[in-house]
Length: 532
Ligand code: FES
Image (cartoon, rainbow, N blue to C red):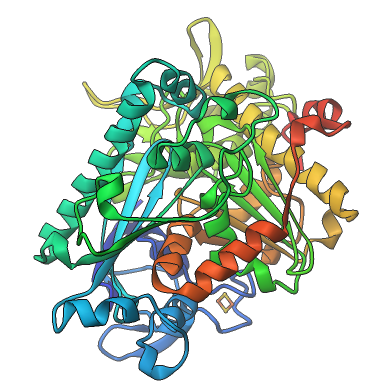
């Protein structure tokens, strides 16, 4: 596929994306989440952007990339901008009491900045925010340095039980955040002293380790949090290198398996005042679900594992250059799209969802997830598709990329990969069904489905529904909201009002322990099938 360069202003972000991608997709790839109220049908006009020097207005969901482009994205077309700016605007506007007020007297005319940190089990993301206007100035991310002590939450909890385990895990994350802060300060040439406020969100284990709280109880039933409260602590007590007169705010957790990252997601997408029956699906190293309206909210954590982030998948990887991010049926064959237009090296979450949907559609795998027999594939598929069916370590597999040049990887999808995918999506689908049952509604009662996660804005709703990852609702009800946890952390950084809303949300949300629901076994087994 041909690729073109799209620059987004005023952010100054740019991307190389394949011909025919919509501007909504392109924006999502650089972390700009557009308002798509009508689900990209071209009827709401909420996604309007301006093109090039002429400033012609187009609907981003309808405009496809056919050449190099510069696109200006106004604030009202951004999913979160309104809320963030409202809470970030200087107090003189009277819109909200902002955190910046506290520091004006201390800082005089110099910059007053904050850092919003999302501690993921795998990745830590830090955004530098100008507290005076709420704008994000720079972003840095790193592999969570605790991964050297274990890949997942369970292995970190058991590591914390050794004599110096908790202290080491804590030191690793504090050092990591200090490194991110230093990098952010160097990028915009400010001193660490200009950082007055840091907000921290993460799952309960990450939150507890950062705060130095015990975590062993999180590893055994009934998986109780040591604390679900918000904590405001001095930089010195936690060891963060920032202005010593500043404050570190760790937001409220919901339960042992639902941390402040889910609180942040619920805050970012306005669950507190949702009028429509909304399901939020946040996919990270696990899957978190929040269902309801501002009146009543249920939430659950699904043990989905990291397959949708690319882990445990033979050629799985993060959504970075060289990752297959989309797979479609193209004439008699399949076509792939690779991030950055580079040679394919891996497959990321959105590519995996697409690939499984395509294999299902072509009849190469059946609803049980098993590869069809070669003869059968030959009889019903084109020769090009059939030639992609190969044997790998004695098991059938499907070749997604063309044969690589010498030294290049050929990206394949194995039978085991499909099983891992089924486990992940099965956990999320089962969780969704059980939450709907708790709410007393069926899928038809869902008015809005919001998919959040670091895999960005590229997941095709039709594929996600086809494989059963998202409930079978009309596609226009599905919206992608990007990394909502990071956005929520940014809102928490800026406003006391948002902190109060977050606290109220955690008290309102009723936690459902999915695995303890009576129907869990049966629903999970049924959800392993690749079907809506
Ligand atoms: Fe583009 Fe509605 S018009 S999303």
